[in-house]
Image 1 (cartoon, helix red, strand yellow):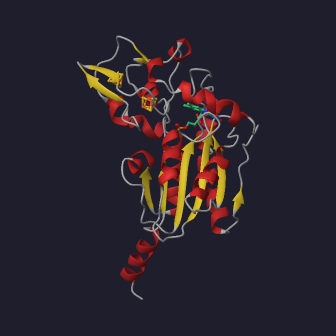
Image 2: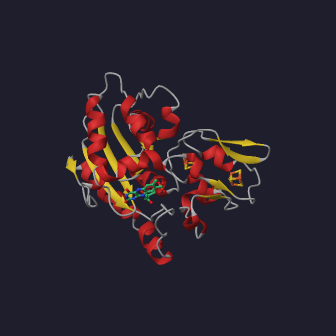
Length: 267
Ligand SMILES: Cc1cc2nc3c(=O)[nH]c(=O)nc-3n(C[C@H](O)[C@H](O)[C@H](O)COP(=O)(O)O)c2cc1C
Ligand code: SF4
Ligand code: SF4
């Protein structure tokens, strides 16, 4: 077997694998990138997939990496898992929940949605990363942020090792209070109203927010950002990643912004 052939073979195997990520402020992207460095395969954005038919060719290892939103899955990930299909393929699926405090039943939600599509959720993991829900909470101090971000590669090593050893099951160490999902999901419907965003006079009309919004809820009109949908995912990408700090959502959000360094270049 010559080297070229081996390389082609390994490419063919890896191209069956995919890591699907969804991110607001880059934490899940950092985790997904670290996993991809170790597992190989393609890396796709959930927001891009749901703009299409959600049919994937991948039939190897499929990873889904996303933040926890209101003790459940982000709405785009709910949309993805409600429609995802691998044709006749039977991939091995893992979920990594990226949370600020705890996940509650986000893992059960994913399991249920996949099961309705005839798919098994083979592994669940979670990684604690800096909190970005600034309408209510503070971003952690820089020292704590540095500690969490520098621990990502070790977390990825642990996840990959469990997958390689076929240690299937729920490895989520940040479950917390399971009942919080029921309490919080009702608020999430009202909480996602875009009318709650306020644009201050620092908006330059640069268009970054419109370009990164996973649900295309923002357009630039007359040189300013305008929300064109009643509800959005509330991922807070626009608020945190606006270079002018022009987007607010309540008084508390004026204090600080958080962007994971993996996204700093795109600000
Ligand atoms: C709308 C919203 C709701 C959130 N709800 C939770 C939650 O229920 N539990 C939790 O641990 N973190 C919660 N967070 C924090 C994020 O999950 C956490 O900061 C995550 O690292 C963000 O990942 P990202 O940078 O990939 O968007 C929430 C964040 C947002 C924006
Ligand atoms: S990213 Fe900020 S400055 Fe740029 S258009 Fe959006 S709100 Fe305005
Ligand atoms: S409008 Fe902002 S918070 Fe809402 S989904 Fe788009 S980027 Fe995320």
